[in-house]
Length: 415
Image 1 (cartoon, rainbow, N blue to C red):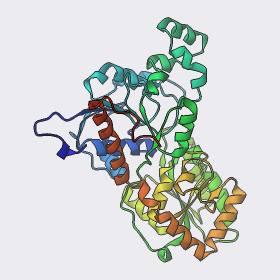
Image 2 (spheres, rainbow, N blue to C red):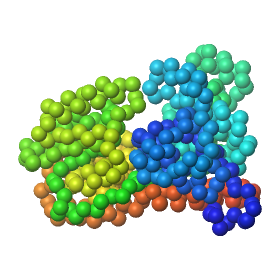
Image 3 (tube, rainbow, N blue to C red):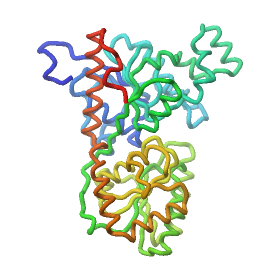
């Protein structure tokens, strides 16, 4: 649907988008920013969120152009936020469940409900874009407890058969499974399909920015890694592994472009990374909280990227490397492997493999050019324009289907 398809004086369709992570860090916030950018133009859009977004920070970090007034905002009461913040579990999804509970009370005001992070029971069928699966591992054990009456659910909670968040959200797996389900990688899509027996479609997240396309010959034989300073990124592993590479290629440098993570152990991990860079100051460099423009410039300066997160759901940093013209080396499982089309020359399962494949690449100019040419063909899959076009198409098709009830809800959305 676009502006031309709306008759003069006609009411624009009302959409409700649920997002909880809008802190201008990481892939979830990037997806949220570009969904807002994609839909605010043509729809009467309302954002149901945990905390009001900082649009200036989002625009600066992700390259969007969101303005106050582009959409309405319903933020969670600060008292509720403080109560939920008492939960000691850093992986808690209590905040997501509070938003789902609120959604059920207001969803009747909207023509379509969307969620941009985890599995969602909106109370009615909608569109869920999964950047990961939060509850699929629980599904075989708890689904039958949630599909019973309220008293039985309470008894199951008391016995410990149900986590409290499921009652907070009044979560129903059966309602969730009726959503159109989009995923950020085929890897997550296959996991969700196996868990729930539902169809999914992959829409790759956007790796946006004004990338500087510097010729290969003008780049330095160095590495860059990008991401939040989080233990999952295994930065110390990168330093150790590239240190081994440097025994044969002593001029290699590593540049770490990082930002402080929101997890409880983030400050301690940052201290560890800072100490690591200081002890290897001759070749390891830490760049913190770069602007989008400075990150694009840094990516264009070096030939190689490295990503060490094991089984990450997508890995926007790797897509950014590809768009910037770098050759990234990534762990063999998860979304990053998909970004590079499972090229065996760039995948590793161990430090030994990584060292061997990196040395093969940096010592073979023909292999470098062949790999760059192959990666250039992948780059368009991860652009912001491609992402927005795909999101708009799914939303328009679903709204059209709702005006034509005889049409199959999944037509055009299966992978």
